[in-house]
Image: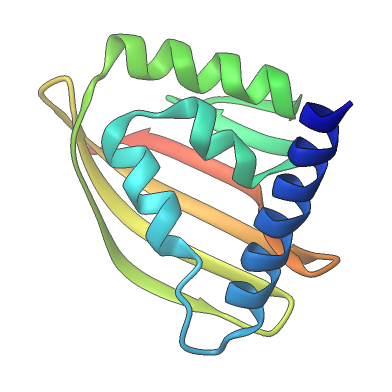
Length: 134
């Protein structure tokens, strides 16, 4: 019982920290997302996924659940191990943000587009698109 109470308390504290950071105008929500993509850490990146999102990888577009999107990205990162990920442009409004980035993975270059929407008090990934650069 104590372990469950500690877990719930920790989860609430993490949610409060995330909420506080999102409400802080100087906080860049793309910093953790960038970090997890660079590492190819789908597990941590998926914490930023909306319950349902659109994911496009190499021209294959899917409306996916959070767990389906995790599998799609895991498969991509298994084939294309990220070596570099750099955001080139960000923009947005209070309820929506997007970023355009370049990624070098598996010896190839990719253009990545990420759309976030404000859901409750957190920004979550609503759409991610990974296309090979020609």
